[in-house]
Image (tube, rainbow, N blue to C red; front, side, top):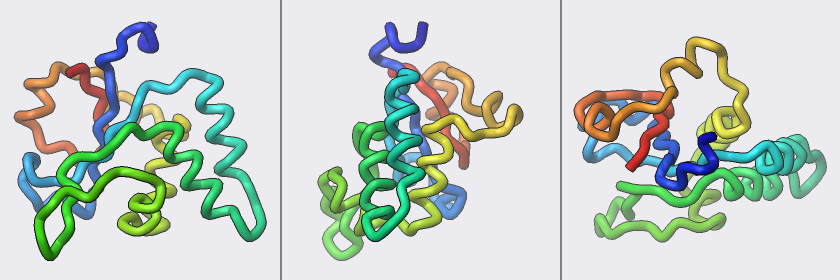
Length: 135
């Protein structure tokens, strides 16, 4: 069972960053979700009204544990990961893409691409889609 393997994590890169070398790409780090986590995310994501975006960000925070290579453009210093930074640095399309992935709304082909891989395989490849890795 994947939830019993705490070192498993999901590494998500965006297609818009495909032109960057893998070691420079911004990466969102997700955790393997339980059904309860996915249910909570789905209910938050489907919220309507004035705070709908805030609820979508809350949902993303359930499934994300951090990021790598997300740096201030002017200083190159790492941007601390939190919900406000997520809202500041992701476009709405990117946020929805992350939520769709984390809640399992992928096609069968996309799921096959995100199956667990060995860390060294991921480091040597150039994926532009989310990849599950064990570190």
